[in-house]
Length: 167
Length: 187
Image 1 (spheres, chains in turn yellow, blue):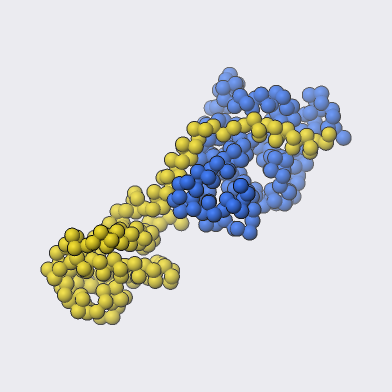
Image 2: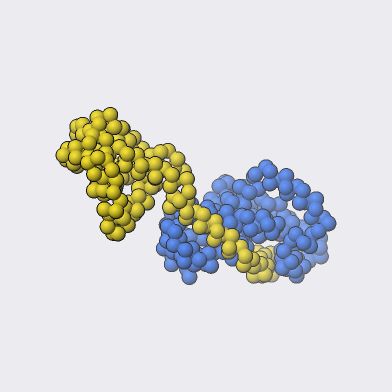
């Protein structure tokens, strides 16, 4: 028998006798779950998401509708904004945030980001009255679900914009 | 399950579908484990590396080129993880410590099943004594049946280097085998 053939045969037999220890499964599964959580942005990312949502929530009640910036697409007509009271300064801040997003995301990503943010803001506007007070109970169950879904879809974008995304 | 059928599951697993993860693990873990165990001998290290291979699998799936065989990609990841592990200096120090201990507790630190097959298979035990650089070529060539060009691609070294390592490995094996009395493979 040639050495090639013998090597193949012996390596195959040796491999057959090697068995992956069953408890390794638990460990790999744990790492996998860790990966999934990280991907869905449970741990450090969640803070950024919350910070992002909080920023929007705080800024809306006190912002003044300024002009046709990116923010205009998000808030809709000027009357919508005026109903919630508006300051030029803070409107600029939102505009700045959106411009940063535009710079850091690809064209398609930004398009989706804008769309999602728009939906999120619509919900926010719905529950914020003219004095800037938030009434979460105004949301229906479906709207609440939608809200959470939007937040989690926006999560990776916030992460990217805030510059903490891994390569 | 063949590789083509496995791919959609792998994609689902990377998106967080746990049952898909189970399926992918079941379909690949023996292969990954054995490949690593041929290259690294300490049981704990083997398990660490297998775990890392799976992490790498989820994280790099987006880089996978569907025109190439899945196993080739998987083995590429596996070999790279083994090499990464070998490179890390602090681990090398640990290894040094272990090598010292190994002389007194050899039977505990090597898998018993592997030892048994070493005793039954002379040539296999000689393969295990080859240096890592030669051994990895032998394993990829004779266990996974890759062509020398494919091995070069996977190890990211020139084909000429693979050829010379392959040649050297066989020469070593023949020489040692002759010394232990088995002259059947000497041409």
